[in-house]
Amino acid sequence: MLAVFRRELKAYFSSPIGFVFVGFFVLIGGVFFALSNLLTGNPSFTGVLSNLTFIFLFLVPILTMRLLSEEMRQKTDQLLITSPLSITGIVLGKYLAAVGVFVITLLITVLFPVLMSFFSLLGLGWWEILGGYIGFLLMGCAFISIGLFFSSVTDNQLVAAVETFAALLLIWILDFVAQSVPSDAVSGLIFLAVLGAALVALVWFSTRSFLAAAVAFVLAAAAVVLLFVFSRSFFTGLIAKILSWFSLVKRYNDFSMGILGLSPIVYYISFAGAFVFLTIRMIDKRRWV
Image (cartoon, rainbow, N blue to C red; front, side, top):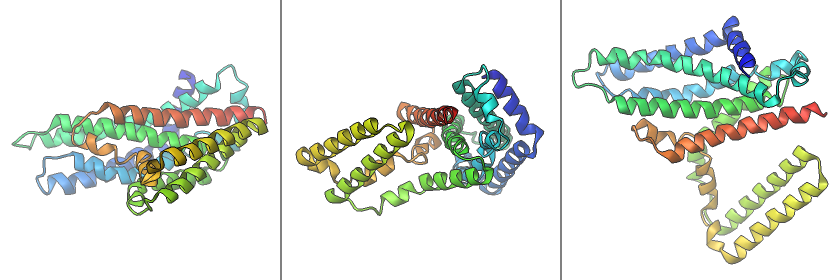
């Protein structure tokens, strides 16, 4: 894993990708810093990080689009798969390299609040700033895991970048969508049935086993029917609850106020771990195709 990590980290700065990512992120961060803090005399730096979350949606595809798609395009993925390295080690090495570039970028932006501390008469809320950085780091790791996954499903870097951006944009607007979806029980039932069908399809495409897909279908259908019969109130407002549960941006709000809660930390780590696992399964599946 360490060999892959070092190779990928070096590759980022042997090509323009790493410099473009770092330079653009720091440049936009500097603009937000100047407008929000220097020109207005505002001592709160967390607003800069909150504004950067939207810009980050455009930068993550640049950072992740080549991780695995480039290997498939050059037909070197088979060499990696058949090497002594485990698939888990390969995927984790590439993921941690992308996270490493992200961490380096965040460390550079720490210069902004440090600079501001020399001119702030009232002092800075360093615990609030620390919480904002921890939350941004965790959210960024979750975003990067999504980009890593989409890089594993195609050998075209542009397609991987577009798919990653579309997925991140969808996650970004989930809170707005959740406010306008229907909240009645029937709509919740239909939505849960669609999710069940998607789960069955995922089992089928992952295993190509009719038996596994049939078992998943029976279990999903039984769960939906039993819930609707014995706890119909469960379906009221279900769509909004599920959409809100998948919101990555909403969980960052506590961090931006300096609140370090265990629940969002575990959620971000679990979310990133889930997409890294899906990527490993995608690569492992290709080994036998």
